[in-house]
Length: 203
Image (cartoon, one colour):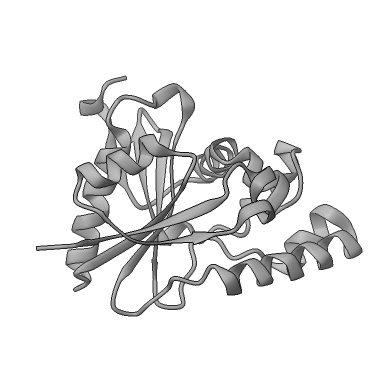
């Protein structure tokens, strides 16, 4: 597979949706274990995510019907991922589902960057076997075109302090740092201490 074989699409079949959930989980395992779902069980996470991802709010890198990358695009009150109490209880039981749901809502309150005037990227992920092939850049370019087509001129995203490679990619395509949110020990086990907020103005 090379970059030229990759197509960016917005519609997926059911098998591809499961692959998207799997790429998402495998891209952020520590966040899922210590911040989002509090599980390191991949199958539990996939079962929950597959029914909580708003697939229509994303773009996907496809080659030969296989998914190799995804980018979530949020506008206003829309979320690419919205954890549902029903799904959490189904996977983790009543009590396990309830406390995870409360934790998720608290996380969302502290991490709300949605605005009607801009597109918020969350998440962007590339399958491990496809990294280094320019898929992330291709997804970002598609996101820029998507934003322009719906009349948005600003795109925002966040990158953790422990991912300088991603930060360099975002800077290379025109993102600049707005500010930084420090969480310290709260997110230490999830693999980072602060989140860098970045913005790009579209021409």
